[in-house]
Image (cartoon, rainbow, N blue to C red; front, top):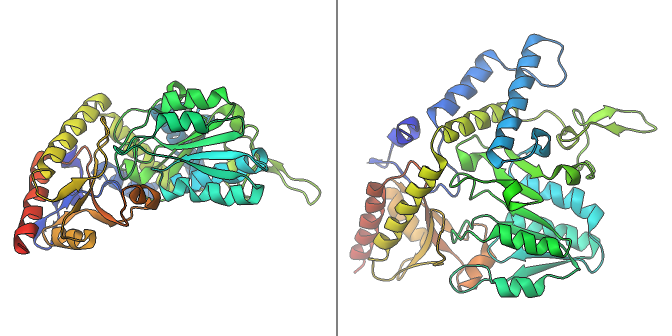
Length: 400
């Protein structure tokens, strides 16, 4: 049923049926999301929180319904703990610029795992330089897991924040976030979790994780681009200052003093991505119409099948071997550059990614500058995995 809902999977690329194995970069959109966006612009387009008319109230209700849907998805205690942002990158920058500016000082430390996306490294470097704090990398083990002994040794009362991915976009590794968070809290540190690569693959409960911040991007979970969410514990969010000024985030403006709207609106300056929220709401309703645990089980079987099939190819090496990985398989193929691999597969209608995947420290851990990556979702099939392996075998034979 999930596959039947994705119109783009019916198209051809270079004369072949599309095989979309670039879900780590972005997911394809269900028909329901596409139709909801069209319907919104055709019959419900209005600004929110400021119009004294029926359509403004309707748009506002949909917008806030979307916020409530995100809160339910994350297991958040209240919708007011959810801030709409453009995506994970903006969410992390928001935390760095708002919370970080008030809570980091000279000599403080931010622990960041080596498997992070650049979006969970660079914002911390920016604020650390401004506040004269330090960004300290948490090393990885050879199998792609975070070195827990090193992590425990690095934690101290200088640690103000720990930044972790819930799932690596290169290795697929799912670290023990709950346990790492509990350990950080013993030192009074806050924990930010980048959920961009996790949210589409398995259920998330931010209260069970006890995460102080949790972020994700809508386009990684079958929604449009340009919309995402930041969760923050209510008591933390209440103490954070706005990081951008403008309309929609104020209560009263005067040249002498401006007062701000209550949370979460004080962090949503200007007109929000209303259509994006419509699409996100629809995507989350679509996703949660499936048994999430059944989806996670299906994907676990699919990635195990793919892992086994790929390793039948001589000279192919998959990065990371941590158990319980999400459906991300980054690999190298002896004698072939990643860009060459991606180009060959593209001729066969198979879309993967090649490059550094915005995770250069992770690749350097393996002595690499770039690699190829196949990333799967709930609508992918074992047959598509077979097509990937067959095409890679043909590539090898073409240069033998």
